[in-house]
Image 1: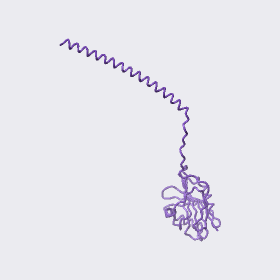
Image 2: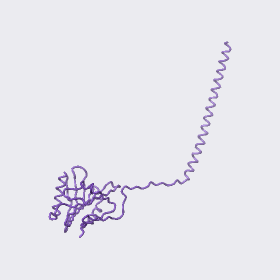
Image 3: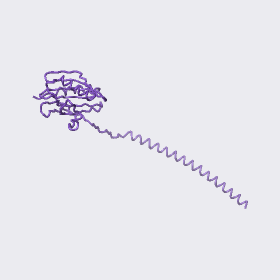
Image 4: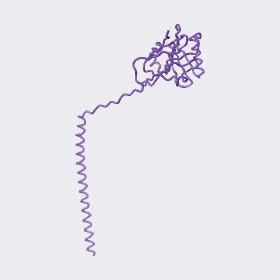
Length: 228
């Protein structure tokens, strides 16, 4: 029995040795196969990249989208009573007076006739254009009306500063700054026209952005004239 056990143990040791030898061979073979596959893969990738460089891929351009596209030309606006007309560029957007009228209206104004706005996306700024009929009589004069406008600003816990004033015949043109209790300072170019009624045309924008709009503001204000 002991001889058989010894023989059996010997056979088992030999078997283990063979398994170890086979395992090492297998590992070596696997390693060689990996190297071969890596070489083949690299060769294919190199040829693919060379082919790709020779192929002209189609050019793709993102479509241009403008939220407020620039419009060519001008619009002519005439007041509902036909006594005033004005011209401004076509990229101004007229707003619904029924919605914004009470928001932009001041105590000195009888009612808004026009509310429009313009956005300049690349400059991150905008401007407002309003036309209003005033409550006062012509006898009060431009200077008297400006004093009333200053009082109106004070009632709103703000301040109005008139920068310059030019009065000729029945037309007054001026620039002003409006400071509220809080928020940014606005600068304006405005015109009062006396034609039985008193009309106030106002171009507003931020004080910092006013130089950007100054030329356009002057063109619009100068275009506002009474209709005989």
